[in-house]
Each structure stands twice: as C-alpha cells, then as structure tokens.
Image (cartoon, helix red, strand yellow):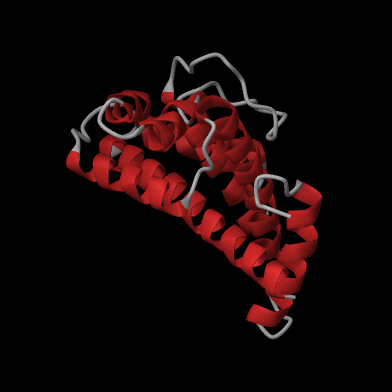
Length: 189
C-alpha cells in the first residue's frame, strides 16, 4: 500500500508498532498522543496537497519551504510571511504554505476549510500548534489559544510568530519523515 493510499487508521496501527520498536516499548503518553494526532493531521494535509497539486507532500518539500521562510522578510504576520513565500517556491511547498494560511477548523481538526484566515490566531498554522501542544502537554485548548493570543499581541510578537511558523513546519516535516519510516518498515515486513 502506498502512502497516498494509507488511511489514518493504517497510520495509527503502524505508529504503534514503530513506536514500540523505536523506543523499546516506552513513549511518554503525551508524546504518543501528539504523534498520533500529528500523523492524522499530516494525512489530511497530504490528501489536500495531493488534490491540489497531484503530487505527494514530501519532507524535502517542507524543508524547501523552511529555507524560503528563513530567507524571507520575517517581520510580518504569519499569514503574510506564508503567503509571500508561497510565491517564491515550487507548487507543492507553495500549496502547503497557502494551506497553513486558511481558516483553522477549530473543532474539527481533520476538516480543512477553504476560507483564508483573516488573523494569525485563526490560521491553520496556529491551530496546528495549539492542537499539538494540547496533546503533548495535556493542557486545555482554550488555555493554549489564550497563551498564543498573548504571545502574538505581546512585546515579542515578531519572535513568537517566527517560532510558530518554524515549529509548525518542522513538526510537519518530522511527521512526514516518520510516515515514510512507517511505510518503509511496512514494505519490509
């Protein structure tokens, strides 16, 4: 089964087997929950990119996007940074950049909206960070959103915007690498 055909359920069962081998059967509960959630969200993102570009989103595509963001003007909103960089890169990384500027489906993490976000806090990039932090640390969703709101409107807002972008992109890249490893192990079994 190719990664394009893999379902979230396949990712879940594969992740459980990879996790037990990779870490001698012990993963912190928050980390495992965040990894599983991340794999589900990465699957939804890959499916959307596949529909848009007729190409699979690979870790190299995300790495290219990270490089482009590093080279760009970082003293802007998250949405503006990602939209600007989408014009500088190839179609697949550009599609990911634009997707992250869409409205976050607040209560439905696997349903991607067509509307563009009007504020950083409402973007899929921020929503992704919120979900991963909630899963990883066991915090409340509203507490995470409030913390990010304070960070994005506070004195170091520009720094926090960059942290969110790089955290989101590097996490997506790492999840895609994990999915490739799962696929390799499955093919070898």
